[in-house]
Image 1 (cartoon, rainbow, N blue to C red):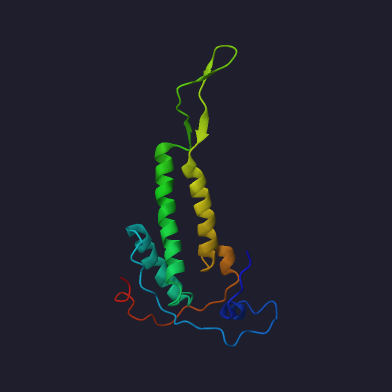
Image 2 (cartoon, rainbow, N blue to C red):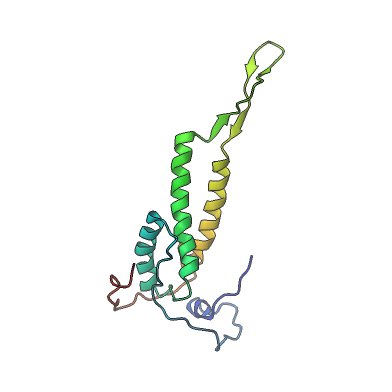
Length: 160
């Protein structure tokens, strides 16, 4: 899905389409938003680490809390699902009362894929896309030309 590119990103990439820039586009404050209260401990840790990096790059604003929170929670959920799949296995034998018997009299159980594998694959795709919106992937960063901020305000007091 193609979304409109923010004017600031067009400027950072050199406005490759050479279309007129939107001079009236809203410019939210570049701050680290409050951590959403629903994030679990691992997601909060991810927020604290990468929120500072995104702030230093000028890529986190007061409006980005919900979207960045989703990215952080997805990261945590990916970690949990990965651990569960390692424990349970990627496949399992279907348990039922009847086991199939072939013509030679050999019994066969039906093997199934762990549904968590599909959930993990879908979550990873969503994560890559959403994290890419913040320049989190190498190919996404190639389109940006950001400058690290010289001065970082006392962020420790601002992060919950």
